[in-house]
Length: 81
Image (cartoon, rainbow, N blue to C red):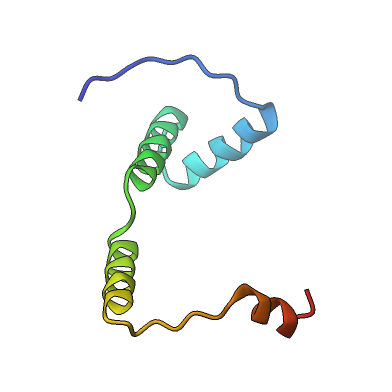
C-alpha cells in the first residue's frame, strides 16, 4: 500500500490527550495517529460482520412475512407525540 504524507493542524489540548494515550500504549505519537486513522478508515469502509448478519436475517424475515410493522401513527399516539 502506498503511503501519502499529509500535513494536519491539531488543537493543542487534543494533541496533549493523544500524546498521553500514545504513551499508555507504548507508541510514538506518529505511530498511534497512523494506527488510529487506519483503523477508523477500516471500520468506515464497510459494515461489520455482525451488522451484515443482522441485515441478512432481517431481509430473510421480511421475505418470509415474519416481520410485523406498526404504523407511525400508533407509535406517536402511544407516546403522546
